[in-house]
Length: 400
Image (cartoon, rainbow, N blue to C red; front, side, top):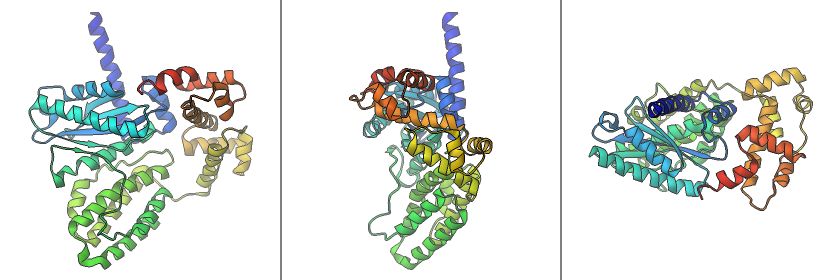
């Protein structure tokens, strides 16, 4: 009876985890909301890195096998950090791995974990498996970035075959012998980050004109390559333009079909424009208003002056707004109150400083704007669930 109760309780917990993860993948949480819900569910919320890994059977769907593929994936993930896995409607198995290691070490762990899971799945199903890893993110609310990049990465099997691990890499320029107009691409990324749909579409037209000049120097495969590699860059750019920091819900668009339709400069431009429009619609991006710029000024001020005494009146005056209206506008644009945002900025900086073993707790307290170390300890505990000393001794270095 006790075991059944424990199993039932664990199933409820995992259902809540799955519901939360699906919300993250669809961009339903802002940074503060993701941290709060993760803390409530016992999921690492700060000081960790996160990445998605997708697994696909090459012959038959993994979900149709007699084994529990998600359970197997989750079991292995948890040998290497915090992990969770579940089946997606498209027959993929999604694994999410989290660690507190530095990026270089996490990169290695991510690959070796994917390698181990692939081997175990193939042994259990007696079929080959293809794996795609997503980009590493430091913020839970941006897990959708990792998910989208993992989807794009695993789709490479449609061009170069399955039975391998496709590793996400930062968007790069095309092959050296393909003179792609990189300055225009940088302008495009900038327009996306600024939330300007009109500018972005104008730049796509400029890129199309440049590509047409190259004529026979480019093959259809080159245009497909340009599109596939830049989609990730555009997605990440739009994530920073969205006021909640969330990304991309490209539901309704099939990237694979879009790539298949690309054969020349014109089709490249058409599909790129369609993708950009979809991204802008999915997050409701608007041209920046004066109010948005005022709040961004306040956020920038907090990010650079967090160690100083910052009051609500100071920021309202900076934005030339009344205190009450500033409070409402800040929460509307950022998704949390000024006080909560300031606290999180200070705590994130504190976690960064805790990595330096030479710094004393009271020194860190002063560096992030708290003259009273006891109050700093209280705020840190309220935010992360543990004391600064415990965090340093047991969480930062536990997997080193």
